[in-house]
Image (cartoon, rainbow, N blue to C red):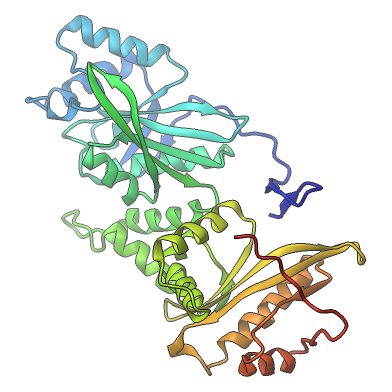
Length: 388
């Protein structure tokens, strides 16, 4: 993915290659090991789902979604809406062993052209809550959304609904913030928490979910051997290798610490808040390329490159503006590896040259640059105009 710029050098956005939109959701059956997710039918699923939901005798599980149906007419009206609706598009969650509908779910806010879809309207009965089937049903629903070509899967919740907030993060969704006073529900203010899971993040989340759902992860009594979080951490540890790679939002906490240390190295005051805002924006906007060096799960250094252009050369140029190695990792070749990786990445992108500047008295850095073939500019003087 490459950032595109207008004639004024302003970043316009990262290219989405060959985007044709996603497939509108279909009324398909999603088959799992402990459950299946079927298009909702009032005749087929209504009685079983009502019986399962009525096991919640005190009604505590209805607090955030909708008022609990009180009469036959209420249940019939709700089931009729679920059967007829196409956005939300409702499904029943059916227990594999008994064949009873024990919950329901839906796709909603469906936007095939934009590649965005939400999973929601989750109604889990006591028979489904905190079971393997509860996790598997969501896995099936999310997996199918990405197979239809959606780029972004959303999860939204009343910001006071702690179990829903926890469930979103457990499944691999990233918290994006709270829309304050988003709605009025039954005369009550609702702040809405937003979560998202992106197509590029899905492979890692899918691997963790499949590792947890694997039959081998449960003993003869059905007890999990490893939690989903343990499965996720295990896969991360397995995938981690010492070396240079592109940074991601998952690196933000460690990367912010490195970046703030870099700023302090150049005489700035400690300002973790400003550092986090700056680095987070770069990662979200994609208007710089950040390389990190990871060792045993810890980030030891980073380099940040900004795109420029050479009018004379009629070619792109990258500015290697930031290079920093944590104090405990210096003299270990980290800086050299970051510089070599930056050069190779630039070549792959057809960049004409890399540029950098360093302090006159930073002799160690100058020696490193020159050992890798960097040439000191003797033809031009560098000027700057400080504006604030």
